Length: 69
Image 1 (cartoon, helix red, strand yellow):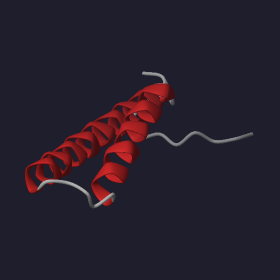
Image 2: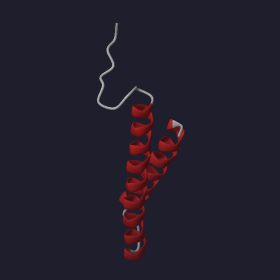
Image 3: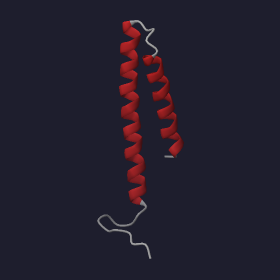
Image 4: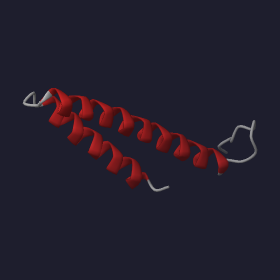
């Protein structure tokens, strides 16, 4: 997947965290935002894993180091 996917997730996470930090929230809204931050962080982690696996798949056979010449 393109890096833009991760950028969009991070942007959403930053906006959600900023709203949470604003402090003018009902407890129910704050709890919902904490849940949303956790969900977005998990989504970002999964996207990073996908990107690492995709990069590894293009680097040659598993267990071999690429040598610059």
